[in-house]
Image (cartoon, rainbow, N blue to C red; front, side):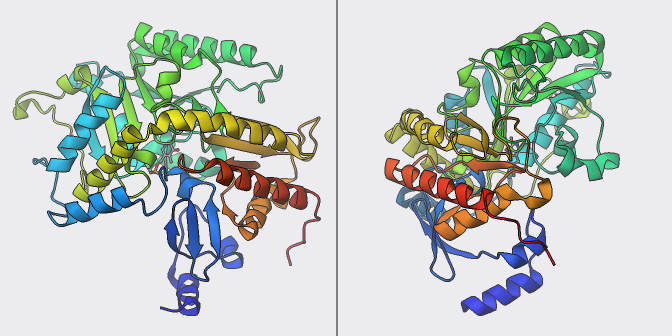
Length: 453
Ligand SMILES: *Cc1c(COP(=O)(O)O)cnc(C)c1O
C-alpha cells in the first residue's frame, strides 16, 4: 500500500491510544520498519528511538537473536492456552524470571500487558486475605502521582489527576500518601519530604492496617508521573512498614524492570523483597506483549487446596503465556546474560548523566531527573522560580515535535521531556540524541506560540 493511502486510511479509521486525535491529524507519523535503535517511517525518514518505543525496547529493533527465536517457535506452535495447561517456553521463562528476581519470589502468573499484571496483583492480594479469613483487608494504599496502567483496577491504584479524574465514579477508593519529592515539598528538601511521607504512611498503617490488603508502588521511579525518583532508603522503609503491619508490598517494575535503572530490577537498589512484583515492558525486549505477576510461596499457598474450597484464582486471559512472546523473552534474557547488558547500562548511565548535566544548564530547564536509562527533563518558563510555561503553550510537546524533525522520537509527560533510549544505544547515539534534545529545547522555548485558529 502506498504512503498516501496509508495516511488517508489512518486518518479515517484509526483511533490511537493516549492520543488526542486532533494532534495526530496535525502531526501524523507512520512507522514502517526499524533496525537497531533507528525507526523508519513510510516516507523513508529515520528517527532515533529516544523513548524505546514507549519504554519497551532494550537491545534494538530486529535483533537477529530475538527474530530467530520467534521464527523457531513459530515452526512449533504460535499459541496454546495456559488455562489448565502449560507450554514449553512459558515454563522455561518462569524458571528464568525466578532466577533473576528477588529470592523470595517463586511463582509466575502470566498476562499480556503491564496494566493486567497490576490488575492481577490487586486481585491476588485481595483474594489472598479473603482466602486467609481476613475479610476486612480489602483496601489498597498508593503513592500520590503514581501510575500503574489504564484498566479500571489499575487506575484505582493510580493517582495522576489528569488521566484519572474523569473516571472517578468508576474507580474503587484507595488511600494515597504523598510521594517524597524534594521538588514538590514546600521546603524543597528531600529529607523532610521523605520523613513526612513515611510518617503519613506509618499513621495510616497504624490506624487502618486491619482494612489494608496491600501497598502498591512503582519501584524507585514514578515514570508516567514525570520521572520522580524515591530518595535513598525510602523504599526500604516502606518494606519495613509493610512487614510490621502485615500489609502486602506490591512493587510495580513494569517500567523499571530489565536493566532500565541500571539494575536488573529497581528493587535491587534498596535490596527490597516484595510480596508481589509486576513486570512487563522490557520483558520481551520490546517485541511482544508478555507480562507477569511474580509472588511468593506464601501468597501462592493461600490459593492452593481442593477445588470445593473455592480458593482458586479465577483470572486469566485468552493469550496468556503466548509461546511466541515467551520465546522472545527467553532470547531477550539470553542477550542480557551474554552481553552483560545491565553492567553496560549502568556504565552508559554515567555518560548519560554527563550529557544531561549540560542540558540542565539550558535557560528553560528546571530540573533533570535520572535513574539509569530513565530520564526526565522538566521544562520551565523561569529556571529560578521554577514557574511553568502556561500549559496551553505545550512547550514540551512542541519540543518533542521539533525533535522528530531533527531525527529523534520521544513523547513528553506534561512539562517533562522523557529520555528513555534502548539500553543498546551506543555512546555516539546517546550524544546525538542529547544534541537533538538540546537544540529543540533551545529553539522552542524561545519561539512564540502560534495561536490556534
Ligand atoms: C507502562 C506502565 C504500566 C502499564 O503497562 P501497559 O503494558 O502499558 O499496560 C504499568 N505500570 C507502570 C509503572 C508503567 O510504567
